[in-house]
Every structure is written in C-alpha cells, then in structure tokens.
Length: 452
Image 1 (cartoon, one colour):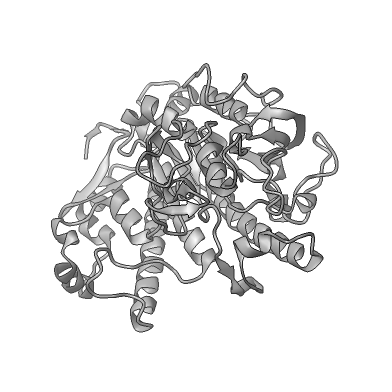
Image 2: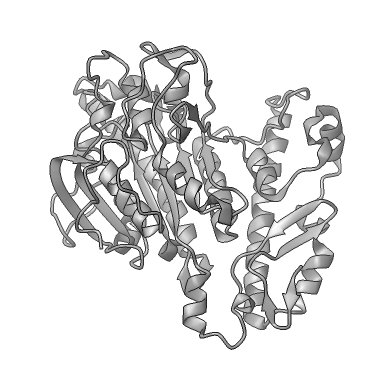
C-alpha cells in the first residue's frame, strides 16, 4: 500500500499471496488541505457502458406516448419506474448501416456489427471480416491507459467467432458489438469466474485443469489472502471510510459466494467437465447470470479498474429459451411473430425480463457511493438493440435509452428525433462527456441535440 500521512493513493491495492484487490474511492484519497469538492470531482471520472439486447423489441410496449418530462413508462420499461429521473428514452434514432444496402439477408449480423460502429460490415463468412472501430474502443484507446483494463467486454451467451452464422455473415458479427479495429472484434467474456479472476488475478497454475481442481477443493476467499493488508489499511481510515471498506469487501464476498454456489450446483448436476480449460461458473438461468455479471461490472467501475464496458445480454439472433418466465420457445423464432398477438406478448415478456436485469444494474450503480455522489451520477449507460421490430428486421426508430446521473446529461425525458437521425450521433455526445471529443464515428452527422 502507498500511504502518505492521512493521504491514501487512488491506486492503492490490497495485496497478499499473489492476489490484488483494487479499492473504491475513499475520503482519505482526497489530498490534505485541498478543497474537498474540487478534489473529489477530479477523482470521480466519467464512465460509459453499452448494454445490448438482440432480436428487436415489441415497440408499442416500449415507446412512451408523451414526449418530454411528462412521459410514462410503457409495460416493457415499467421496471425502470423508480429510476425515471435517471433515464432518457429516445425515439427516432436509426442505424442505416444495419440495412441490407445491396447485401441481401443478414440483418442480425449487421445489427450487432454496426450498432456501436456505425459501419456496414463486409458480407463474408471467412476470416476477412471487416466493420469499424466501435465507440467503446474509441474511448478505450484514448483513456484506457488510466486504468488497469482499457475496457471490459461481457456477455451472457457464448458464441463462435468463426463460421457462417447469418446468411453468409461470419459468426464474429453476431457475437460481438465491440470492435478494437475494423478487423478485430472483442468477444465478450461470459464466465463469471473468468471475469472475477480477470479483475482480481489468478494463480500461475490456473491454466492447469488438474491443479485448479485440487486448488478448488481448498478454495479460500481472495479477501483472506489480503487480510493482513486489509487490517493495516483499516488503521489508517476514518469511521466513514471503514464503513465503505466493509461494504465493498462484503460485495466481493457475495460475488464469490454466488460463483462458488453456481460451480457447486453445476458440478452436482454434471454440468462441469473436469478436463475443461476453464471452470464453469455460469448459472443455468438467465437472470442470475446477468445479475452476477452486472455485480462484477459494478465492482470494476467502482474500483476504477475500467471506465469503459460493453455487455451483450444475449448474442444477436439468439434463440435462447426463457422457460423461467413462461416462454419455452426460442427467442429468435418467436421474434418472427407474423403479427400473432400471442407471440408478440411473449416477445414483450422477454423484453421486460431483460429490462428488469438492467434496472437491477442501475440500482446497484445508484446505491454505490462514488466521490461526491454515486456511481450512477458519474456513469453513462446506453441500452438498446440494432433491430426495432424483430418481425420486420428494420433498423430505424430503434429502441434506445440512456441512463445516468444529472451531472452527465439532462435526465427524465422522452426525446423524439427525426427518423433519419443516426444513433452514432448519440455516441459522439457521449464521447464528448468522456473527455474524448471526436469529429465523426461511422455515419454520424453531428452530436445529438437536447441532451445537456
């Protein structure tokens, strides 16, 4: 640890036996004799997160009837009701490059590949894939050196990066929304255990399945490895910071507990194969998996391990079943609803289920202190899909919303734009708030109006 008098370095780590645990912001990290407010603001950086859902949305149950601050959340967005003052809902945004533009079928691949890049992907099922640099990576390339991880890519559904997944489009397109370069996608991590080890470190023998299996029998919490450092740190903290530290370490313990319970249950039911290259800590049902990943993402943002993240709640074209909410059919299959009211109702049910997990994440951010406010105050979280109506496969009038604190933008409104407004314009505005001013991104035409 680096402690100078009463001043704690923002880069302080708890260390022990090869483990390293980053810390959230403490009052002790404010330099002595500095003006408290200005010092805190300097150490509360802006963050950006992009959450993606596939197969379009039941738009009549997504789009608010009224514009401005007087709007009410429709059925799908109802889980966000308590967070209305932290949300902007957009109508009229478009992803022109998700359209076929002479390339024929393949809307799912184009939707995912162009959603954050604003670039029409090359139609190929080979290794010569090409799209564009995504907005998250534009930010990561500029500010990523300030954090241990330049960016974090998460998901809830694994997928291949090679082969034909959508009418002649490579699987890399449907399984990634983050693109480091026009030819290099960033596949999402879907295993919570792998993400946990990415955030907190793993031992050198982690790649050896046999060694990892023996180690798992005597698994100790990572917090036990850093216990001595923790006790020393507590002696240098005031009462408020000690409480913050206890709450933060409790959150890490809870994530560990969830992962270990999942691994134990999977082992008991025969899900885990002992010779697997990675331990399987993936919950069988969607909601526990999504929330566990959101918990990990919250910790990554809280500790300033990264300031940029993407989260694919499912891969584009996903045919996942949601039996736990009464939808046993595959998602993609029923998205081609042919205007059947029964199928549309099931799509709306899935859409709301996704929003419920997103609302959980926003609630976590809002309840996590950060500097002079909360994590949500200093974070922009965009949520949406590259397809509007899954039956029509259209890419105009997209379902997109932006959540965060009023310090980031003017919240609590439904804003309607002209139908030709590129969704990439929103990303230019977000990059500007991240301190990464950018002239163009994909097919952008300028920053989005009425946000600030």
